Length: 353
Ligand SMILES: NC(=O)c1ccc[n+]([C@@H]2O[C@H](COP(=O)([O-])OP(=O)(O)OC[C@H]3O[C@@H](n4cnc5c(N)ncnc54)[C@H](OP(=O)(O)O)[C@@H]3O)[C@@H](O)[C@H]2O)c1
Image (cartoon, rainbow, N blue to C red):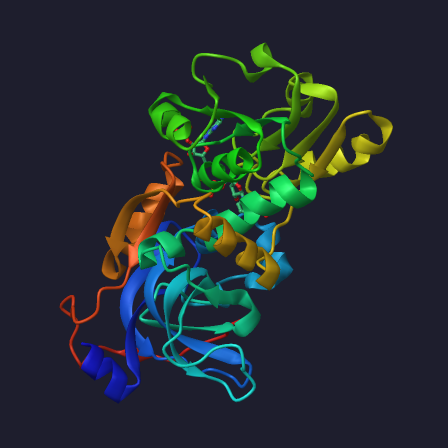
């Protein structure tokens, strides 16, 4: 298949032409993308599956559609952001990478054999990682780092409560906080306890058995899952502590729970505690910092399962169930035809961001 791909300018990809559940993801043949002068063409080896990809598949919260992702249907027809692969071609303005470089980072449309990205959104892939491990890192790793370091202003010796510790962001946050010298308590359900302990948490709270407030007095709380009320979270925080609201999947279809972050921002100036939200974008320095943490042995991405490209919809379905242990990834195995022939309809690339 790679021969067909290379010679014909056609590649295999997951296509999404409408919003909806995982059924909207189709395995099809499309035109291979061409890099713009400031872009890099990546031969994708693995793609990470993150909550953002799932939100863009569903078109929810609806606020996303108003923010330019497409009112009635997605503007970007190939899902997936996180990528690990090999540089296939570079635009005329790109000086940072050469053909053959092994890279990881974020791009548009990573659920495909090839994807394009801007050079600052990529970094050289740490040599000790597999492609699957590297693809699990960019979005979740950058979010965990920014939540702890920038929003949380974590310093060594502080006590940190990480709620949602067994998921994509949480499993990396536990490792980054531990490496920074924090005393980490992870919150997850029973099935995640062993994983969270193995990642370095000093103690774990099984939220199906125990309330987080029963072990109060943290310097920093990362609220990554569960959508607990501000009052419940504040009760578990020191009077001088910081709450960073990273996300929740229980915030409703319209705004996705942004109201809680807004309330926190409005309330914070009147409190001794600091309450803040987070919108983490991938940046070159953040990706570089993640690379260094990998090279130092501080973080190892925890990949629960890898799915072949043709089964990407299963990977997203698994994530949507909300019970992921660490990360799931999509692996692009070349030379596999998956029953696809040269006569398949080739749909044109449309409306990429
Ligand atoms: N602010 C940003 O810039 C940013 C960036 C990336 C992601 N996010 C958001 O962050 C959230 C988490 O993302 P993710 O990739 O880590 O998702 P994920 O991989 O699905 O992990 C979420 C984890 O939370 C656990 N969980 C569910 N309910 C819980 C509860 N009541 N209390 C404690 N833990 C609970 C789940 O496992 P168990 O139930 O088995 O414990 C799951 O492992 C999402 O809402 C995502 O949209 C925000």
